[in-house]
Image (cartoon, rainbow, N blue to C red):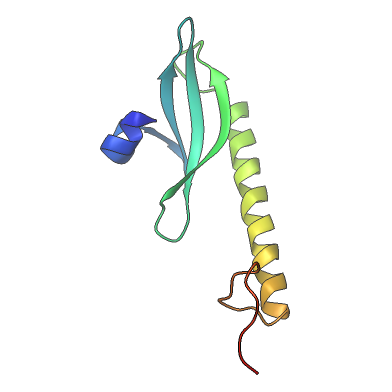
Length: 101
């Protein structure tokens, strides 16, 4: 991930849609970290799945799993935002008390 931090997405490989991967070398094994960019300005790298690198190609089943996890993450975030709006908390952090009348 140091390379991603330093070089941005040039250090990654786009898999499909919003899904990317980067490689990491361990002492005895290589890994692939499958992630997505999230946040208002894509500042968050959301890790979705990590696999041991055994072949040159990322298995489609692992990409599908990452896509399902990303969909779930986004749906849960939307649910939280909707609840906040219903409670009258638009633009307000839920851990902060409401001010004013």
